[in-house]
Length: 373
Image 1 (cartoon, rainbow, N blue to C red):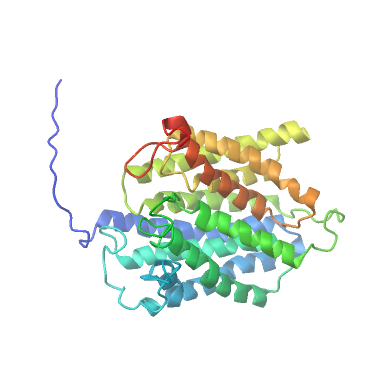
Image 2: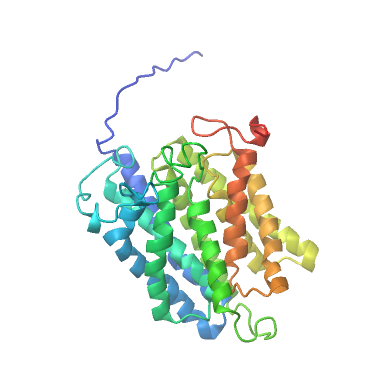
């Protein structure tokens, strides 16, 4: 049977509300926000019993501080008009989100600006919360809240502006106009950023008493860890697929690639444990899943499903091996933020050079016709 499909093209007003995209992005924002309580469970199970409430409160404290800072000046620094030659946005252009409460389409066609602002706020929150794992059991709660406010202002927001806000690495930026940067959902802005911050804090604060000597420094509640990993995996679908800022085929691709890379990384981590230690563990399964989520984040909308599986498999294996390095170099990265988020984010970003599929947005990677140039 022959059937014909009539294609109709029409001009779409970017300032006309798109109900479907808006509904999807509201749901995606809620999913990403859920990741922070999920992280609280994940980290809460990894620390000793005496520290569980402190580490969980560090995640919840980040939600409170970062959301307020984001509304007052953080969003302006990240996504406001260029200032200082693309280094930061203008924090005073929309201070307190003034002038944005009813605008539509300035950041994504058909999407209310407040939805975009809320979505990006959840990214800032989870990024700060991730850092807490590197300094578990060594930071007072009040000092952590102060750090959260300063770090999101001085580090996260400027880097978000460089990559996503039209700054240094934007298409018209000083660097981006010559060498474009690809980061679909936050491999650099979120994970490498948090991982490097965790590394610096772990070095400055030093080791916990008994590090590498006290046998009681071990996860106290693995069911908490598994629950947290499950909530992170669930929320990450909004994190990655929502970064398309539309309900379309690319969002669907990002969703599927997130599932595949995470599953492959889980298996990759377990295989390393099986050959290295003689048995796989539930902690390895949870950590492998998170490593896969991290690695596919920058690439999920730019690679095909086979590429996602390969990215995840390598991420699971590499991050499993990286975790052991902290004992060799004496770095007390308490909950493996550096090994999972920095290493995983770095691999995911570099993997685009191998696995990116040619499209209007990207050139092909090495294995997809891009060559070495």
